[in-house]
Image (cartoon, rainbow, N blue to C red):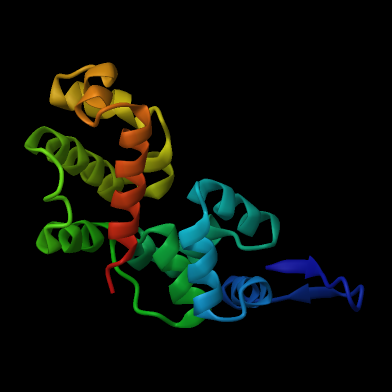
Length: 174
């Protein structure tokens, strides 16, 4: 990657991993700092956009890392590059949630919806899971309308809370 170094004003060439790591560590000095911000972000998309604006180019990192990064969540890509953590695939995160029986507090119908959401996450990642339009895709596969799905949870606020909890479960995987 080539860029003008703001401190020296000189053209600099740097590996995208090193450049991203430096920018991530400049924003979040420790893994704990990053995790605090990740967990506290109401929408992960906003945090990811902020990182891109600060010079963390996830698509370029994926391209450089190659096939290994293809099934990594953005979260795992970040902690792998910046903090040398072993990444998990989205599928491994879903399997962890299933093994932990985290969804037992929900009715069978709600668990079916949350399972469909996890499958969607496994395919496309967290940004789509947080997108309200994900309900359209899930409703088609479950043969229920979006309104019916929301009613299963007791309303829109309860549905959003269940999705937030699902997200927490997904990222609690070690």
